[in-house]
Image (cartoon, rainbow, N blue to C red; front, side, top):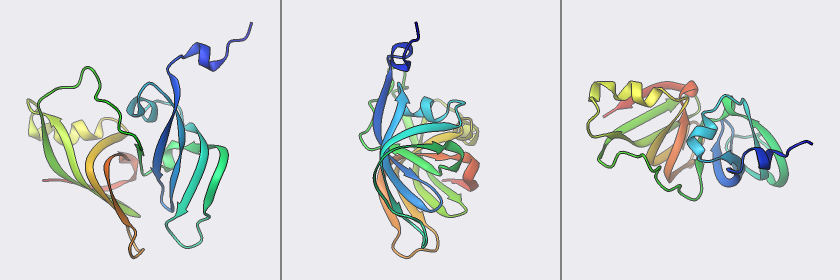
Length: 170
C-alpha cells in the first residue's frame, strides 16, 4: 500500500513566505517540514510553492498574481522569511547579543543585526553565521541596487551565503 507524504511526515505544513530573488520579490505559501531554517537549509535543491504572486524588481521581470503552484530552486534565493514570525525553538539560548551586519550581494544589500549566544567568542561570529547556507538576520532593511525606491524593512530574513560578495560585522 502506498503512503502519502503527509502520512510519512506529519510535520508537513504550508507557511506564507516572502522570497527575494535577483529580479523579483515573491509572496507565496511554502511547503515546510517543522521550522523554516531547517527546511531551507536541507539538501533538497527545490521547494514547492502555491498561491504565488511576484513583484518585479527590475525592468523586464514578469509580475505574477495568484499562480496556483510552482517549484523554486533554492540556489536562486537571495533571502527568505516567513510572513508570520515563528516562535523561538525550545532549545534557544536565552541570553543573546546583537551585532550590526551588512550583507552585500550582486543585486541587493541587507543591513540589520545578527544574534549570537552571549557566551560565544566574537572572533567566531563569522563562522557561526556562515555555517548554514541560509543564516538569519533581524530588524533588517533590504535594498535593491540600481532601482530607485526599491527598499523595505522587515523583522527578519534568512539570507543565502552563496550570494554573498561581502559580509561586515559591527
